[in-house]
Image (tube, rainbow, N blue to C red):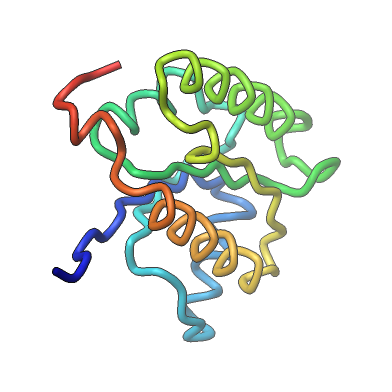
Length: 142
């Protein structure tokens, strides 16, 4: 029987950089995984650990946060705060038996549509390799 699993990937993207890169990727007709659903934020510094965990609870197979390049945040250090939240969430995921590799942080310039497409494809491929979110198969929540 052929595996028909198609992962659900959620991307929390900074309005000024990563979201602009995703928009540019579309304008340039770059192909990347259609499995990615983007949540646009003014700044990734507004991402909370609970938002990341909730995405998994709601059925995401992989999640990534994409913000401005380090040192170039439009809100000074928001992307650095986001990186810390990702690190915290990875620890919590591991504690509850979910692979921390399902969560990642990327720093993407507004002009780097290729890097956005690469991140989307990488996270989709990771989810394919890891399989469905264990919470979906076990019917549990965090």
